[in-house]
Amino acid sequence: MDFQGAKYFIIQKLIHELPSKLYYHGLHHTFDVYDAAKRLATMEQVTGDELILLKTSALFHDAGFIEQYKHNEPIAVKMAEQSLPQFGYNDKQIAIIADTIMATSMKKPPQTILEKIMCDADLDYLGRSDFNVLSGLLKKELNTFGFECDEQQWDEIQIKFLEEHKYHTESAVKRNEIVKQQHIEEIKSRYK
Image (tube, rainbow, N blue to C red; front, top):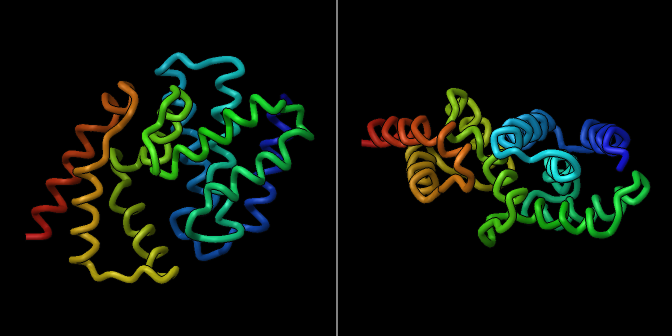
C-alpha cells in the first residue's frame, strides 16, 4: 500500500473540491479525526497494515461531502474504491476501509476494532475542551444546509445526542467520557 500517495491524493481532492460552507465537516475535521484515530490506535495497540487501513479510512471518511451533504458515506466509499487500487490497495483492504467508513453513518453499531476506533475518532470532540466551539460550527453548518434551529432547539438536540452517545473503545471512554458528561451538565443548566 502506498499510503503516502493515497494521503496526498485525497487531501488535494478535499482541498480543491469540498464546499466552502462546511464549517464543521471541512478539511480541518478530516485532520482532527485522523489525529484522533492515530491516538486511539496507539492506545488500542493497532499497528501495521491495520493502522494504515484505519488512517486511510479517516482521510476518506467525509470525502462524500464533495458531492452531497446527506448520506455522504456511500460516496466516500465509492471514491475509495475507485482511487485506492492505483495506490496498491487490494480488494480485501478496500472492503475493510469501506466498512470502516460506513460505520460512521451510525446506521449500525461498529463491529471491528477499526470501526470502533473510527466512530470514536469521528466524535472525539464530544469529550474535549473545544466541544463548544465545534458544536457551534456544526450548528452553523446545519443551518446553512437547511436544518435550521434556534439556540433552545439546538440545546435539546445536543442533550439528546450526548446522552444517547456511547464510545466504543475503552481508550475513548477513559479519555473522553468524563468531559462529555460535564458538557451534558453545562448544556442542561443553560437549557433550564
